[in-house]
Length: 204
Image (tube, rainbow, N blue to C red; front, side, top):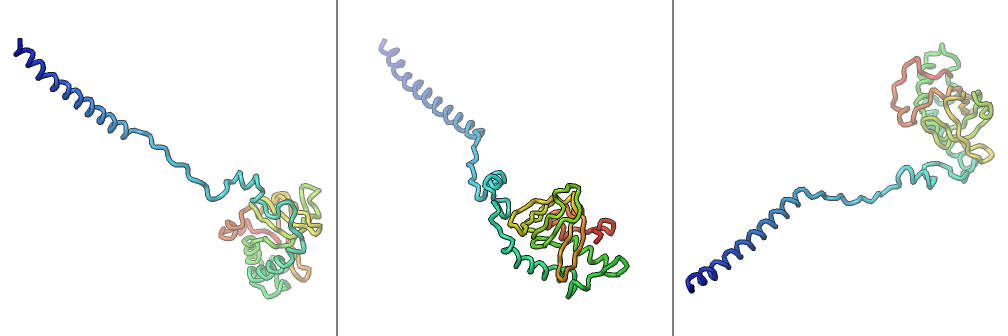
């Protein structure tokens, strides 16, 4: 009797110890396995800039928002643009611009006009499919892919769709270049590096 009780007494701690060791090892194994497949949530990156929707909501994407720009403030910009166009067209005076298509420099002038940046240009609408646009004039404050935004002499900013108008580009000495707006429906940055074919060059 004493021998049996001694064996029972001696084996109980061993079984209990084995069970505790097994549970601990199995728990560690589960922790290891689940940690391998645990989905790690990415930390939300704070934006340093406003999204396009926020810029539109706050009016930050529109130049001259709320008609705060005056025509008189843009006259120095127009003078700079005229100097830029002289360099762009490669002429010392706008009087030297070719008058007809038989001139050998005609094609080059047309090509440079296509690539020009019109921010600061003084333009007016000569013809349009929309009668209300005819006669609109002003200095370009924003040149987008499909529109010109101009500030008129009345300090009102108007948006002109390019594809429905024929524009007059006013230079010094009452010289006017004429161009179809639909031929300028390209972003200014892309227009400057685009290779135009002869068939697509604007007719002045």
